[in-house]
Length: 150
Ligand code: 4NP
Image 1 (cartoon, rainbow, N blue to C red):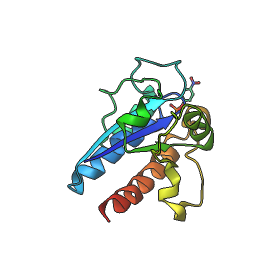
Image 2 (tube, rainbow, N blue to C red):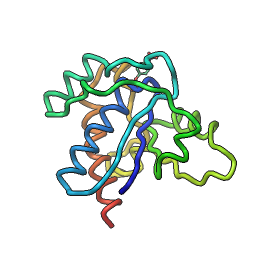
Image 3 (cartoon, rainbow, N blue to C red):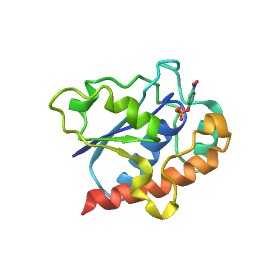
Image 4 (spheres, protein in one colour):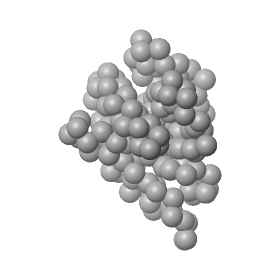
């Protein structure tokens, strides 16, 4: 069982989407996984994913409504096998909390889709392009699942 944590800044747009997309694709691929998401910031703790993000995801049959935001903590380094960051700022903020001796990998989401030609999933809370974020998350989730299957 692969235990994977997706992390962004607010945990209301990109990482909950990544969690839901990844879980749906893993189920379709019959790959046993346990997934969660978290934000490096604490502004939205306890909230459901952002309304416009939920709406865009629902059009693709991903239900984000049961998810609730939480903040990333150092304990996540021991609870998960792999931590997937949406952008470089997330990666940096995660690494600052790495406990001594932890070797849990922290990787960029888009490293699983080199063909997309971008390093980060742009934050749709600011770009307002929720479909761009979902397009990138879907292709990267496919790449991640392919990697986990081999
Ligand atoms: P996310 O987007 O990191 O993809 O969840 C954000 C949502 C809200 C904020 C930042 C990023 N915010 O600062 O409120």
